[in-house]
Structures are given as structure tokens and as C-alpha cells.
Image (cartoon, rainbow, N blue to C red; front, side, top):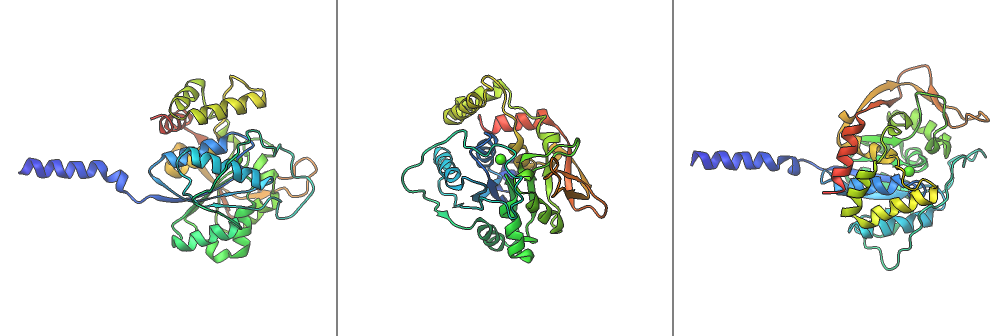
Length: 311
Ligand SMILES: [Ca+2]
């Protein structure tokens, strides 16, 4: 009897991590340009710890991005997740946005009805989700920060109830204008002034996380459509046989396990005027207003990523 009780207790402990409270996650993406958005979303869906409650798109062309998103989620068997149209333009047009390439590099068609529904107004969707989950929501942005900034400006009190805000954005170890900030520098500045203290996963750490060929093969064996998407992206980018960088997946993974990175609190400002430096986040004077990732256990992260999408 004693043995059976002990066995039962140990069995319960064994399943506890699965039963632990799941992380309510909202993803805001510019899927369709680099391949890493599709990989980040697939990773999030593969992890039982995440409850993905909504996904929104940002940046033009919004409808094409939504089309790819519907296609991807259908392939992943998660076309129940509600989707939202977002903002296609920056909150304040400065004329210098678009330094990077916002073209669609892996177009996909989706036909039929999307079960989760496609809704308007991503910022309102984010705010409603914060209320619905009583603040127990993590927001992950892996594109321009426009939707997040508009959500904050629309209802600062509700936005501040977010449990955590993580953004793949910035470059902090050298003077460089990172793409997601460059697409909407004012949005980044708004969020820095919001008091929410974003956690920035920037190029300093993400560039150290390429998806090696062996990992690509393992993922393709489990999810052929994802492997083909990676191959197609690399081909179009002229990097056939190369290794995509796991920028957005790392930002997603640190929500699961913050020990994958080392963070520092910093005061940051965004250059809003410079001819060549517009959109650069750099050190400011004053109290810390953000967290910056300065180091990463790249091997552990890439292993976690590959394992999640191949087993
Ligand atoms: Ca992205």
C-alpha cells in the first residue's frame, strides 16, 4: 500500500510540469519576410507550456501576411487561434522607414474558412486579451512595434497590466539600426516611455543562434512543409544550403526559460531624427526603462528549438 501511494505521488510529480499554469501568449508578427517568424510561431505552438490566445500581423502588406499566417496555422493544425489585422504604417511617418525589405519572400495562398476568425484592429484585440486574462498575458512582438504602441496609447492603464512584454528588437553592442525598430522608431520610443520595461532580444544575442543544417533536416522530417519553407526562403535569399538565423524564435524561447539569456537593465532612447541613425536604440541618461539581453546560451537554445520541432 505504502509503495503504491509513493508510486502515485511520484507519478503526480512527474506530470506536474505539464499541469502547471500555462503561459497565455499573444504574438504580433510581420510573417512573410524573413523565415524566423514562421519558425517562432511553430515553436510557440509546439510547446505545451504556451497557450497562444491570439496572433496579429503588423506592417504592409497586411493581407498577404494574414494569408500566410492562415496557411501556416492550418498546416500546424491550429487554425482555431484568432487572428487580427494590424497597422501597416508606422504611427508617425518619418519618411525613412523601409530601410529593410518588407517584401513577401514566401507567399502562400489560403482558401476556405479560417476557423479561429480573422478580426480587425490588433491593438484592441491585445487590450481585450489583457482584460480577458486579467493581466496574465505575455505580449511578444517580432516585427515593428506599431500595434503594441497603439494599444498602449489607446489604453495605457490596461496595457500596463501586461505580465510581460518581450520584443525582438534592437542592437546594443555596436551602432546599428535594427530592422524592427527602423520600421517604426516612434513606436519603440512610445513603449520605452510607457513604464512597461520591454525586454529586448536584439541582434547581439540572436545572431549567435543559426539553425544548423542538421537541425533543418530533423525539423523537415517531422514537418515537411516547414522544411520546404526554410529551403524556399534560403533559395530566394540566395543563401541556399545556408543557415537561417533564429532571431524571433529566441525571443519566444526566453518567455519559456529566461535563463537562456543574461539580461541587463538599461536606460534607452531611440534616435528619431538622424539621417543614417534613425531607428537606432542607444543608451540614455536616467532610470532604467528596459531590459536588454546581452548574452545567450546559444547551444542550449538551438537544441531546445530543434527538439521542440522534431520530436
Ligand atoms: Ca519578424
